[in-house]
Image 1: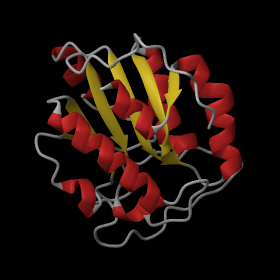
Image 2: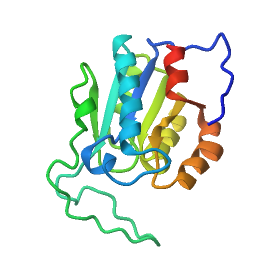
Image 3: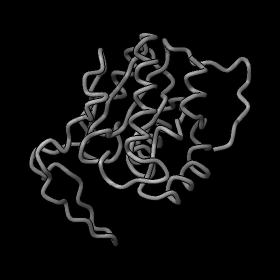
Length: 195
């Protein structure tokens, strides 16, 4: 990722910002990813969670789950995907983040974290206008949440090395062509420096 030469006046207002972490759960983190491994993403997201929690900033942990598979989306698409039999605990947040103090957990039934959840309500009640976004997968859950956040008029910061996709090509495409239109792209270290 290129260094974006942060302006000296650029900072994160922790009272008006939330960290939103997408789908860092057992059944997703442990799948193959690129350009970063699930472990690398969890490490960087954990750094962010700890720093934001220390500042008293609102942290939202998002997971995808299903009661019986019938509440999940099943549109007719060219790429057929069958929902596999999901093992016990697949939707449990990874141990590194599951016990984050004062974190708000949202369960979604689709790609994005806004539709069908109270995420927007919780952010607005706290006067939040900016979201720092990370998680898995960049080209699915993170991208969909980012587009929804944009439609809700939130400012966004995307933490490129605290997210990953199914392939490097997917990550590169979203970070090069989509996210710059929706917000700002930064690294974990750059975001920590902005706090």
